[in-house]
Length: 357
Image (tube, rainbow, N blue to C red; front, side, top):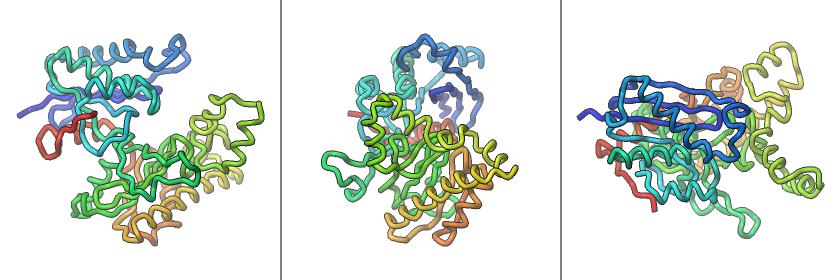
């Protein structure tokens, strides 16, 4: 049976939309947004609802389809309560939790709301796949040395899980039998220990954990952060942006463009090279830490995300880590493809469609 899927992935500066017929992508587009023009008059991402919905419906009409042609609507998952891995029905409880902002605030929550509203109008099902809050931690992964402060599972789960399945296929293994370290490298980093189908430990790069990244500060000395916090020079919002958004390479080199930085290095900029190599070293150390989670039994290391296209980064990390396990490359984020894949696995009955509570 043919299934026509409308897929949306709302980011902070883009709206990605695609139409799939089963596994075949018929149409796909990325609409870029300038925050200073598109959203200047909007105080919160939830005020973008009409703007984003119109983009999605216009895309459908431009592709010569009607909304009533679709069997399922799929959105990238929102930051909500901890969930199991897999495919979920988007329901009112999920959208309400996204709107509450208790678990984070991201345009993907708006995407889930749009998907549910459209699906309700059409009397079809809205789905999401491997939201960033899926939690498969072992107990040892949760604790810090500060009572009431615990490590949270929050990472690029959609791409991590999709790459896990692809890697298992390359190795002629079942994902549920695979031990792998998967390294997602983009504006933020997630280095995950996949143990027999579960991510038992991963850094939360969003809130300052793990290696620095193009726009994330990574793990910081807590005492120094406290001194900044009580200096009366910064607001909470300013400090948080220094951790997430304006940290990492942006803070140190004034850019998040790794091609630009690699050109600086090629032109002889020793400071740029030292900082870039420091980021690479921190990624390698995180891979080493994940090796401990897997007790040294690592089938493969996989690099994914936009920075996996960089030969410089891949080669330098491999110099540190290739002794651990063979290196495999899956460059790019491939979020639309991963949403389609996860949805179709559930629609076909290979995986269950779960209910969010």
